[in-house]
Length: 404
Picture 1: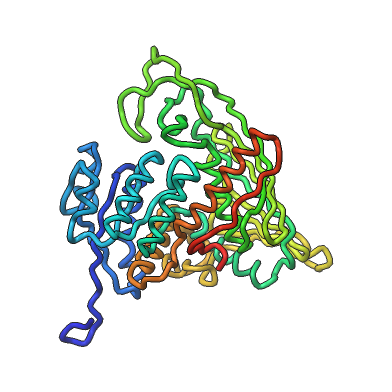
Picture 2: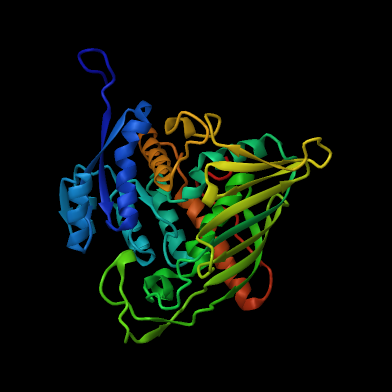
């Protein structure tokens, strides 16, 4: 569509947001950044309506991001005639309900992982979305890093030879303080698994994305180091407070997980994650070894990769390579190496993939099928913890994107 001067007129895409906490704000900023960073898409997201039961959240969303309307009921978002795509940023235990409702309303959705508190809930979401013929997006943020995209390209081109093994870790300290409130993240009914769903779902996706092959079997162990935490008091989200006399409540899911894995391609891997790792802020990384070299990436240095040549090479050893125009979408954000991207920028890339998926009708963003695949790995790991045996992981189905 062009205007009277022959210039392309950007398409308007009506956006509805369900849940306006920290992640909802990230989605909102991503939508607002897309017309600047991805002008060639020819799409301007319009923030139509935001839903959240906490009025302070909807008031802030309207003030900060310009949502035209606000409501306490998510169903108002899905019924709104101007909403063409939806972001679902609620806690895990609400994901299935909201996603099934969005699919029922025929609205493409961008949802955070995991898509529920179990693999069964994730399967429900994936099946309904696929049956409705919807394109979707899931918040696998770390695969969006330009350095990770470049690493995938090098691996696919054979730069490190045949991939043999992977080491992936997602270590954090966000729950290292035992006096931190026992929020919904520590309850089985509301969060499902602990680090297996919260952190290692990212690790499973990242490893599968880099090598283009699914995990086929796992053996796992888990541990809960902080058995009780104080009852939450006033505040919401990251601002929850704890009183000195708060009663202690049981922690119902794992603080730590270690997973051995085999991939369908024959690659083997180790995955490790903790949410109570003193000294580990966001130590999220992956190292891929091959017969002719290795490649490593870590979120704490997200704008670079470490590349190691084969032992027979004259320059054997790891060398740091900074992101530049060769690395994925880096050039959309910065003109040269050393000028880094942020986590918010990765969400902008993620948002652009979702918008491109919606407007093209092609599944380009990480999909509900990708999220189901990681949920099934986590479920197999939980079964392995109980049985002490290796457990097979179902082969992925649906529109997966990690293997493209």
